[in-house]
Length: 247
Image (cartoon, rainbow, N blue to C red; front, side, top):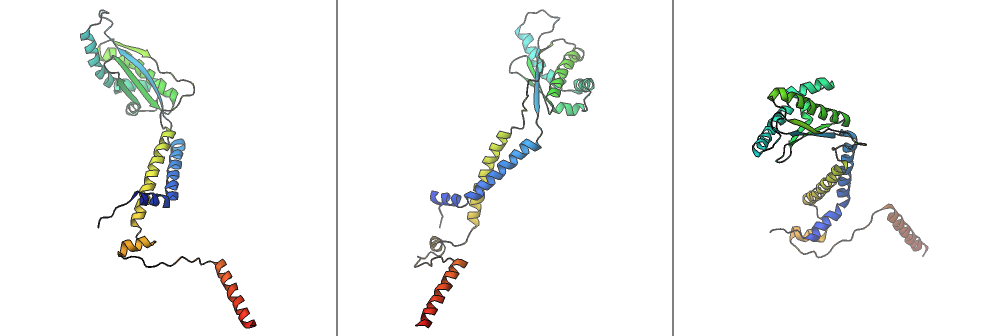
């Protein structure tokens, strides 16, 4: 016989284990807050922009062919910008305790859609170092590209700067806590239904009817068995015995 679960049974299951669900959700939120605020290292971001234009030795008149050529060259420039030929010089000039590979992992080069503008983004736990790296990479690239590709068509549009009270881009504690609350709540609800599914004990008359398939003819009320009731019962028995003896 196929069993069906009603909305009422679902709500009863959730209400029966609501304390467990709330506890799991709170634990998840507290752990997420602790990790976000005290364990994860804040990462700051600095960026600079470069313009890939036509060669300065050519006529200043732009045409579609030249622009398309420059757009195609941007992908090549993006690779060169993160190459050891550029990053090794940046490491030396800034006296960084990093290898070219480690510095490469901090740098992200992105091209604006259908434009000749390249965004150079650097992430680092030190906001001032991130800005210095971004500016130095742009500067070294602008100088070295003349020798590497025998062109002089890169201009720096904007330098990376650190504002007052810079904010880290990650981690985002509020977002992490919100995600933890949702995940904790889902885990609590899932665990509540799992425990309910594994619980095969008989607690009510309805459980008896469901398991045995027989109607319930009667039930025994639950009697409280505690010390207070025992004392009251003992006093009543003593009183009855005393009255009996006295008569």
